[in-house]
Structure formats: structure tokens, C-alpha cells
Length: 258
Image (cartoon, rainbow, N blue to C red; front, side, top):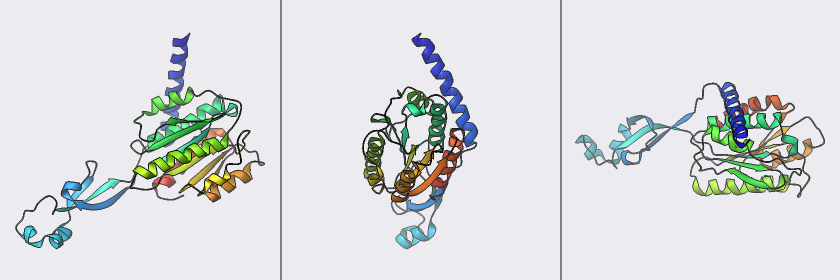
């Protein structure tokens, strides 16, 4: 029976991955031009060229001789722009069945779009748990299987989910010298445990909210959190459009927009 369950989970994970790839299409990562001495050019650099002007200005005599120490040779190159992301996802009882599968597709879209970037994922229901460490090397298939294994519980402790997402965000900020992490909260805006989490939103560099469902009573909280988080509010009235909305959000992140 256990082997049958594992087989069914693997089939579901593969179907989710294929759906995410359909939504995503071809992945194009923006890059930025940088300069540094030759011995500091990172291994992933592309279109590496000698920056003759900078080299001559820094070591004119050596440049005229046609040779220099690697530290004196300045290079210009392209480097893929990184974008750390932290996702906080509601996995309470209201997110079972097809809703859970579509949410898994949305998570797969993010991991496919940012395969080498720090991606942290937090799941919350009665309590919050870290589903993926931002510096953990995890394949998309393995992530989906792990997400499908998260048990759905009755209560929704939104505050604990946002608090843990903030902790993961702070950890990335302490290690990264690049762009600050963007946080994405996937929620219907309702909570049945803990306090109103809006007071935490302003502590993020940027937190956007994907409001799931069409219930209007929780819209005010979602709008307030996106405003305090200096992010955007995206409405997802039907769960079947969640993967496409997520794709739109990550494209904006890649372009450096909210």
C-alpha cells in the first residue's frame, strides 16, 4: 500500500512539473554587465572581454608592455541577475485536492525560473514549517513531492507563516550582497489562529500578496499587507489561474519591477 502511495505521488509530481513547464515556456534570464579584475571574474560569467580603457588607466605602463598581473587586467562581462525569493504558502484544510496541486504548479514555476537563486519556501497551517531552505539544492520534482507530503491541518496560523518567512528573508539578507529577497505570500487572507499579521509586513524589503479566492471580507487585510510590504496585491479569483499569475509575478521580479 505504501509503495502504491509513493507511485501515485510520483505520477502527480510529474504531471505538476509538466504543467509548470507549459506555463513557463522558455526561460530567459536577464543579465547585467559588470567589471572586475581578471582574477575576480566569476565562473558563470559570459561574454567576457578586456576592458582596455580601465586596464590602461589602472596600469598604463604594464598595459603598453602587453602583459599584466591578473589583478591589473580589468574585464567586462555579463552575469545572470540573481533574485532571491521567499514564498509563504497556506497549506491548511482549505487548500486540499486540486487547490493543492495548482499551488504546487505555482511553486514549480518559481523554482524553474530561479534554478540557481536562493529560494526559501514556508508552508503554514496550524504552525509554520520551512519546506525548503534558501540555500538547499533541490530539484523541482523533489520539491513538488515534498510539498504534496505536507499534511493539511484545520487551523490557519497566518501570523506564524509570515513570521517564519521574515526569518528566512533576514537570513538571506545576511548572506547575500546582491538584490534583496522578494517575499510572496499566497493566502486567502483568512486566519483562525494567532494575531493579525499586518504588523509584520513592513519589516520586509518587499512583500507581495497573491490573494486566493473571491471572498471580499479578507481583501482589506491582503491589501494592507501588500501596502505595508511595499509590494503589490495580485488577485487570484480562481485557483486554475494561479500558475499564470505566479508566472507574471516572477517575470516582473526578473525585470526588476514590482
